[in-house]
Amino acid sequence: MMPRLLESAKLANVETKMVPSLERRRLRTYALILLLDGFLFNLAFALAGLIWEGFWAEQRAMLAAQVMLPAFYTIALYNNSYGLTALTDWMFAVRKAMVALLVSAGLVNFIAFYTKSNDEFSRAGVTIGLALTAIMIIALRRIMAAVIARRWGGRVANRLVIADGGSTFPYPDAVSVSAAEYGLDPGSHDPFMLDRLGKLLRNQDHVVVSCPRDRREDWAFLLKSAGVYGEIVSEPAHSLGAIGVHRYDDLDRTTLVVSTGPLRLRSRIIKRSFDTVLASAALLALSPILIATAIAIKLEDRGPVLFVQRRLGRGNQFFDMLKFRSMRHEKLDHDGARSTARDDDRVTRIGAFIRRTSIDELPQLINVLKGEMSVVGPRPHAIGSQANNKFFWEVDRMYWQRHCLKPGLTGLAQVRGHRGATEREEDLTDRLQSDLEYINDWSLLRDIEIVLRTAMVLIHHKAY
Image 1 (cartoon, rainbow, N blue to C red):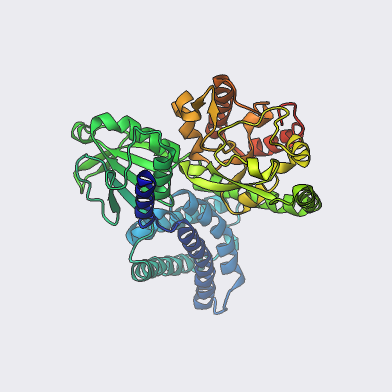
Image 2 (cartoon, helix red, strand yellow):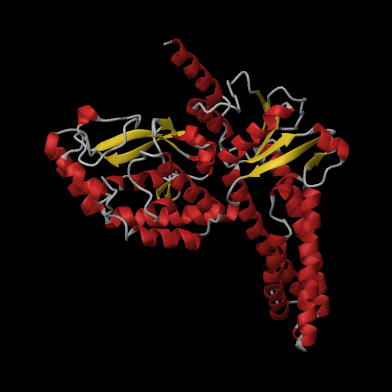
């Protein structure tokens, strides 16, 4: 009873430090600034036409705006005019925007010169339009900085410092926590500790760990497994002026960048969009099968339709995974300590069919829509899963790194035939190798390929 109470107390302590995501807030702000830049661009050249030609939105002035705006957007998107630093430092944002404006103007003029189309533009009108655009963009950046400072307190990113016996790291606007206070031991393989750490790291944009030299490797491993941007403080790296590290000259500290997460923002948006569209379409198309299965399960033994099991998800955090119940209610194994065997006496008649055809996995489409799972990714395991009487993490320490992405309905390991019970250690290591390969080489095309290949292995001799 006492260990459970201690674990509950530690978890409650961690939950007080959990923070909401600021990524959506930033994305909405980037989109707003981008739209306002386009509006101000057109407004400035419309005014330029009025000032020089005497006509509001004069045709030649607006033609110059329409030709120049795509070039401005392209350069601005690539020079971080719509990036995190641009939200926190308005002078930086102004410099980047002015570079994009001048380069786009020069590029359009260069193309117009060689295509002999300069006469299509009024030099005076374009000059006035550029000057007004610059003034308006500068004003917009200053106003946005004031709004961010007033409404958000200037905070646009979540930063966390984990103190684990290393030197102090006074990172501005960061939340600092003690590893000992939250029971965080980087050398431990306790899944409950990793769940606490995963919750603590959730929605963090920047994590810095300060620890002794002998614990850096363990912390680096955990940060990689959590799929976050992580750094580890290194005093020798700072004194030696090492290259390829992150220097904080104002703090007189240097950190070693040890993890950045497997997917960048653009890739995460693409993958999440793919998941949402495919899961929604699948739920709609498969609704007759879902309803029929639910009725059949209920009629067989009057037990619950769904089986809810705690499994390991992204960042080594627990989540409740949904399945159609395929076993007798009184023999359900919520910890997954016993793998399902062929002719398993716990499996019902309906359960045998839906397991053989993989229909039992379909409710996980709801987990996908909730954002707990992905359509494609490493399959989630129960914490009691074993191979050769060893917990999975005891077989291979790299097991934890497969959780830096969301778990999937299907994955590379599954389409390669690595399914069923894990009686031997090789049954796990084969899957783990495929999972890590998928994480390292992710692409949308590969996700589509795995989904298509999954249709070929829905009925499999190892599915029982």
